[in-house]
Length: 68
Image 1: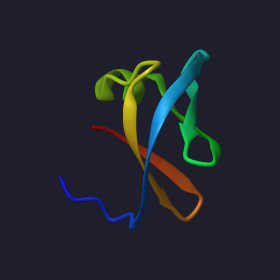
Image 2: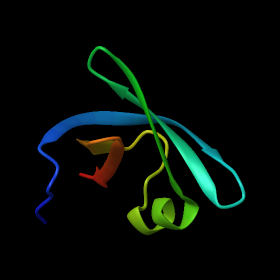
Image 3: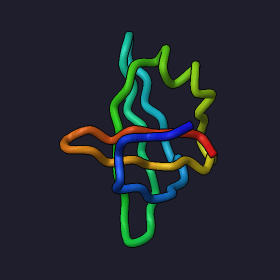
C-alpha cells in the first residue's frame, strides 16, 4: 500500500485509552513519545493493540498509523 505522507517513523504502542467513540494511542519513538487520536472502529479495523510495532506517518497536523 502506498501512502502520501512522506514523514514516516516506526514506533511501539505503549498505551491505548478508549472513550465512547474515540481513543488515544500513545507511542514510543526514538527520542521520545507521540500520541494519535482515532476512532475506536479504526483502531479495531487496523488490529492495533498495546505492544504492537506501527509505522507512524505525519502529514500536516495529522498523525496516521499503519501496522507493520
